[in-house]
Length: 271
Image (cartoon, rainbow, N blue to C red; front, side, top):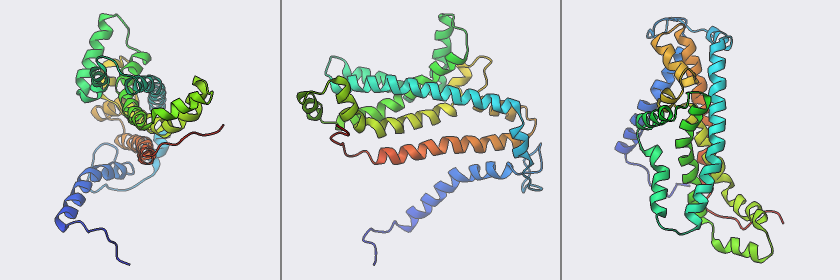
């Protein structure tokens, strides 16, 4: 049985294929050079292939330290974003007050601005307040754009949540916690999970804001940048890059599928 959907024009299909190749071929090269036997240059084609760089990377203490720091920063930044972004979305979408649209614009502004502007602003603020650069300044820097991701997901879902559902729960005797647990949370769950995953991915591979707020701390992307400038073993950097691709790709893919299924709201779960 033939599909009723029209086929894309040949020119459009070629353009789409060319665009995908332009984006994905550099990633394929990163994966290929992770197996290269040459450790100082990027020869084409690679002189040989080996798996030894995976064992070398596993034994590098500096890689583990940078990876641990990145995971910790991304986890805490995501947690802050989930709390603050959800509360802000609830206030903006659930009430009417003067300046609401202005506040909404200010919330999403950090992700619209170039990262270097955000980084310089944060560094100036930390210097002005005499706050030493540390683990927590990195988290504050990452939280500025992670909050936006969670806020956008949450506010969109709040706007699809009918106020009559909350009113009905209150009329039936549910207190605020019960209403949140059985009515609001089931409708927000996938949106918050998708926003949290995307926020984690963005925080994990952030470079520009981290450069201005890290001080002597080295997250994994900063470590990779320094290794490219002063390489010790180039294939190790490519192995780490493969890890970054996987760690960031999987949450983004999961967030895509979770947010795609959020068109409908549900009436509640449990008693």
